[in-house]
Length: 151
Image (cartoon, rainbow, N blue to C red; front, side, top):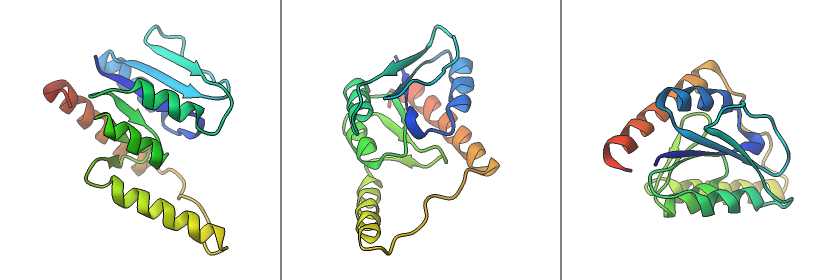
């Protein structure tokens, strides 16, 4: 059964996911290493993992399976989930897939290197209404594709 996993630590679209999941009657698990509130709904669960830089990522990548959906900005986590044939979407609506994960990993490495030598500055642009709309549209498309084709 289709399940949505949210990398909860820095996810800005949790409320949107809850609404879409309710509309499709889907289970959602929010995973983080510090407590956060989730709606008191039977199909929404919070999973508190141990402290540690990759504890939430490890839990999600071990739990997600083919046809599940993972919401994350973490590129290495996305790569691990894609290898298990889960669908991965970022909070601004960009789907990461086998076709584009290599470029995303390379860009991440480049940015890490630039920051290390003092050249990389700034972070991602703030979320806009357009980003949220794009996320909702993409999530809806992915859910329908998974329900129709199993992937």
